[in-house]
Image (cartoon, rainbow, N blue to C red; front, side, top):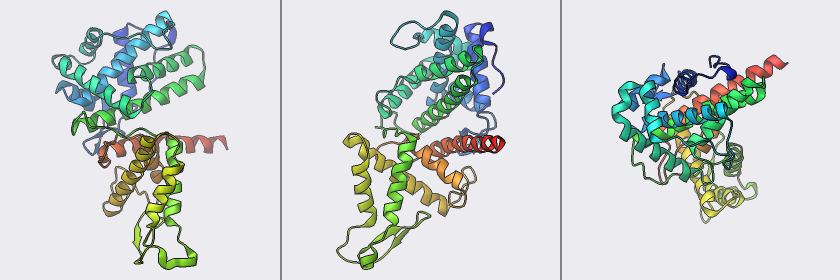
Length: 336
């Protein structure tokens, strides 16, 4: 990301919002997908959606609300409002949109509706988590507070959070563009926990009963293939693994069910990649980073109840995860 303006020289709210949004989206050039093609210019993709009133354009409204809220807190301080940032009216959001993207002003009603649908989906997928514009505003605030106080850790955290949230919100909005915005979403799972659940599932599913090899009816190979072994009166190893993971998941019954649904969706996605490798994602069998990026993405990527992961939604988040993993590895090499 290009260097933002100095925290003590914060410009007009609309200028601040435009500069911030253009910069953070430029960081995601080549990460966001336009259909199934990496977009050279992320801003252009969201701008095109906004000017045609598509749900994906609603992400711009949420980014604008967050930028305006964070600007107010940076200039006037954070009010004691249960930790929440100042609300932004529809009129203020649309005025800022008109400055950012004049061609989208005519689509204001559709974009406000899209932003509301996006917030509704996120609230259902992440119960108990603040609204998206609040989490975005906090990330922006942390970024500029870090700059103000020469706190690289805080500023870096804010920047990573801002990019990550933008990627996830855009993936969700793009998915909602492809179907009913009222479809029930699967809950988001904490990535580290989902990784553990998925690893546990695959390990259990690969385990055979050595004392009675003929009992296994199927098993999961190390690369995710299901190997059929004809037997009688045996508990399917994959079913047994699912039952054990279901029991191990912390949370209510719905959370347990949704973890298994995400695991199933990821296995289907990986199987499709084996049949049809996709350069947008990479080789999940040969490259551990690609595999890890997909597992982490599957924990949070938008997924409707009873559906499979849409390629673009999961791939976009995985591509961003790969960028983070590469950055972490480069930092580690420099440290040594």
